[in-house]
Image (cartoon, rainbow, N blue to C red; front, side):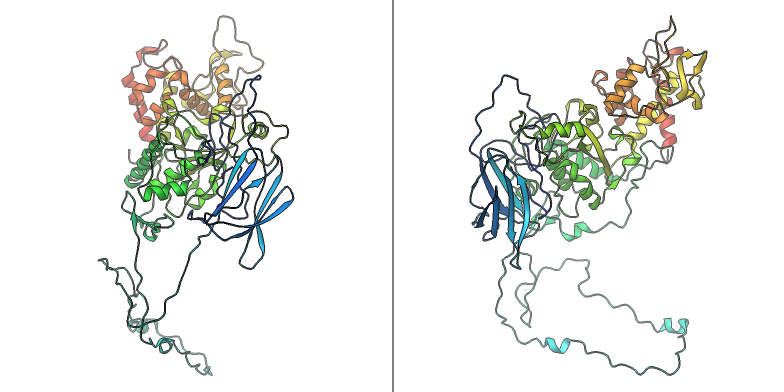
Length: 610
């Protein structure tokens, strides 16, 4: 176990070392034994053969360390540790360590620390498993050592500077007349300049003391990052200047992912910040980051970070750590540090950092804008499965009902999804794996709304080819094979061929709707979208069509659509929509040039200024 306890008294997330699934957990470290551990659970599953025996469990030891929020050990802190009902009083050593504790699997542990008022406060409780467990408790406060100096200056006469209370004037017998606003404005005194207001030129710090013996404030240590911004040496936070809001407002984040018109492109500075975020996030996927988020940032600031390479397509189960690093390193998050330990916990701190919840405006994560942060939790079936897994991947005799739902967090890009890894061909929406449910989608000014506009324009152009000659208002009701003599179905309640209808002899397709989606494809896409809503509405038809473009057998054409590469997308999708240029059922020889012309018309209708 290795946990950062960033908020004393709150529930602490428990790691499950060998729960290694395909997608992924959270912020972590490498423990001294060399085994991979995490600040939250690794989300990978080791599949064990039935006849494979587990190795003998190591001696059950609990090793506890305590540090402050800057990562410095807290020495001399009085604690009480209760393991299986046995109470041990101890004081943390020079490295913040407490004596090792032996325990039996399944025993309850509680840790108390002594407060300044002499009372003890419960800061952590959990259930011990077997093996060597490492627990690092991180206080939300910082320990400072202070000392005073003898006053060596002349008496400053501070008492004379204390303003004396004004004498009370006797209450007038009659109500005073209102002063003339015109004549009074002429006598208004100019607002005096505030002492200490910033000047145009920086003033070098003055060393020593003033004539009254008061010491001048001096910056003794200053670290600059690669953007030229300086950070406080101890906490590795941005300076106060970085917290100031710009006078110009950022791009609105309320643009809907499926808009009707009026989408405003992002400002140049926001796009530059977005590109920086994506570049940093992609770079990190090739690194093995063994330290915690704050420790890693501190090492980077001091140029002591050691790059250990790994495959970009391999997850270490530390999605939360890598996403936090990317957001803070890029400068997208500046107002303080992100400290959430599990992917599923990210929403609250993202909102506090200025992100907006756009979940209701985005049909599903495939439509999210580049720069959006997507937060998931495990669905109930996956959560129950993980509770029954042991540290080594086998089954537990008793489920761990205290296991936290760590979920997953990732950053949407133009061509995929990034956390502590980036999948081949950009990766695919995690919704396709049937193990997660969406917590929310969160957006900062560093985003680009145009990929969603390109998606909608591309879909609209597909309907021009698939439903050629059909009025716009009837395209989403269109049938390839008539039902009861009609080429249009009447209800969005379900796919028109679901259930009772049989395709007439001689007809081979049950394709329907604006994108002529077959019933088998419709059922498959609902499963891949983890969707229980079976209504065949225009929105659901669009969602299913986009899910089709993302699939591996179509070589993830969605990445090309989002980047505006119409030629590449059409070439990959001819097998899905045979009316496209170059496909077998292209009517009247409609060309790629005509497709691109129509695509541009639809795109221009949606974007302001086009």
